[in-house]
Length: 136
Image (cartoon, one colour):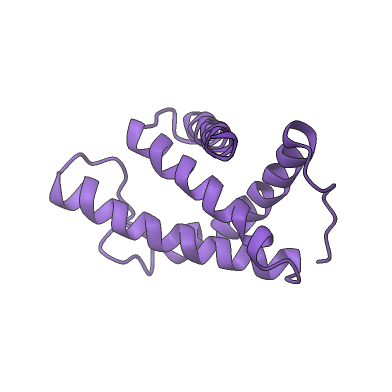
């Protein structure tokens, strides 16, 4: 039960932070972005819990790949199948089905690195886990 509470807290934090950033960036967000961001924050935060020997940059790249794949799947469901028009990258060069593009995939590397560090800081401060340390 304690583990579930930790992951719910981490997910809520990650989802809330992402929606806040998206509102500043795009002046709007959608509840599906909260759900996706919450799941991704937990998954990306688990990368260095699983692969403890990985340096931060490869973890961030792996996180970006996970996030981009999740964005494609989510986009196909909420934008194409359900027609909710949450986002559309059709005008971006190199886009795939208007759901992902190389430009935002690169931005995910930075966001994933921030997520990894924030996840570790929260685990350390609030859940008495190991103090974070990184190698680039």
